[in-house]
Image 1 (cartoon, rainbow, N blue to C red):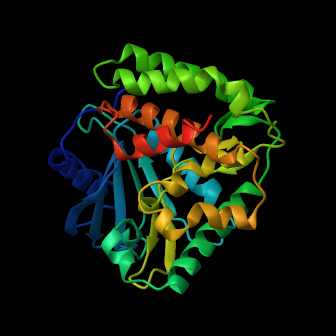
Image 2 (image 1 turned 90 degrees about the vertical axis):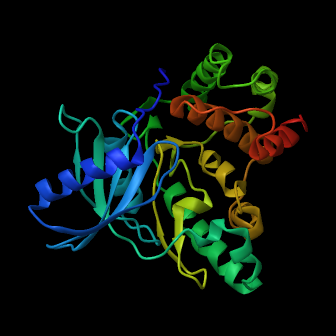
Image 3 (image 1 turned 120 degrees about the horizontal axis):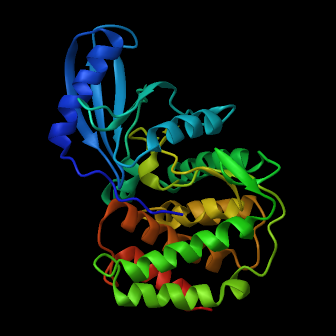
Length: 314
């Protein structure tokens, strides 16, 4: 596996290209376009255009092939899902004039309010429980979808989960030791210690390939101001995988305040080492994203500290 750093463009430059892409594809006028956020690998813009569907979201993907992969994964996780998932209108590959890939999709109502601690402080236990129940309903739906092989949704060829995941984790570990400019020695050391106990942590076999979203944290769950879930967005490298691979993000950000992880465990039986497995998945995913996005990660990162605390239990 090659970890490829993201393309380095400013959100202001990308906004200009987004306008050109929208006006060219829809043959329309654009009355409004604004930057509305982004994660490791994308800049996201909201736009109002003069033709149907009138309101759209357009995202620039800062790593190669991410737009095509996200379009495929949105369709896959959206089919029959009990929570709305945006429809993709089109993707466009980078060119000489517009040197970045774009994906354009349906505008969904709601915001990422659940990621704001102060917002949650004023919400009732009942509202939080309803939120957690709806999110885990979506997870349970995906995890009930099965496949013959494990791997990325576009290239699932492995008959055993660990034939896919163990080499992937080793590649991430090796990359972390090469990129000392991004990953601190303490983080790499913890990864080495965890990987050395791979067989202890993952002693239970994974019985079947399940569909996983890949990045289901609270920032990728839209809701209204009453905490009612309205949509799920932004799958990242969705896989046919160990279903517990989808759980590590449930405790990231404000996930624990919403009891997402424990709600899932109450509704669906998990493996004996689920907690430690999720910490391993979380650490290696964080480092993978750090290197791919060309951003630093060190022992002072809050999420890292929590992951280390969990892994130290081994």
